[in-house]
Image (cartoon, rainbow, N blue to C red):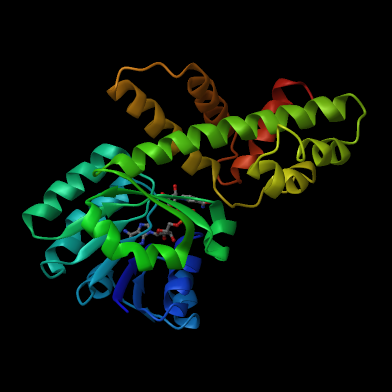
Length: 290
Ligand code: NAD
């Protein structure tokens, strides 16, 4: 079992850190938010008073932070300065691939091993330890980290070198955004036609249009419950990552561009802190059904 430093105890990090404690690891965590630190203590972990306190004695440091500026701040600003040579750093945040590459480069100079390991499966996946984990980095480091990944997820795949995990995650996010938009359009069509949306989506969930978002979110979407979950603000960030990754390799992704604009509209209309299923509100506004 490992001494793990866990930095970023938000919607995802809190249940993930708790699973690692339950699996027998010695987890010391830090988050800027005091309530988040208290939850780690309740789960049997130890709360540090700063990033250095969580990282310095760790064999494995895990970060689960909002975006690349926070990863740069925490990892380049502190973690790499305080950890011992040979430490394994696993960044599970969703960030742009170039930052993962920059972190890997800086870590290599200090003898620290790095994996980018973003996740999919949402808050439910984090709570149930059923996340999909897409991992970029060296094979040997992936193998070393496997017991940790297995405590957090069900589908764990080494997808390539540093940054590859983030590219796969970008592909995931453009698909998730698109599916939300289409489920929202289906709800608007059903309701405007006077057809019971619950009955309609129940039958669709058993056919070719079946998908996880229908499974997990159709009831809350029909009930207009948009508590996050995964915030629109974070999905907006992820669509920017997907479009930038496409530009990097000179490919056009027209549907991704449209989805990015719908999510940008959700944010512009003040829905940034709602769950991404609140894309339904944008589609309703378009349809004159608000
Ligand atoms: P969140 O905002 O709930 O959690 C992020 C946490 O990081 C917060 O508690 C915040 O206080 C903390 N933090 C920020 N800066 C910090 C710093 N400098 N030092 C210490 N703590 C700091 O976000 P989340 O939903 O848990 O998402 C985390 C990451 O996982 C994001 O990159 C997101 O895109 C990704 N993700 C989220 C979901 C989801 O469903 N929520 C699913 C897959 C991936």
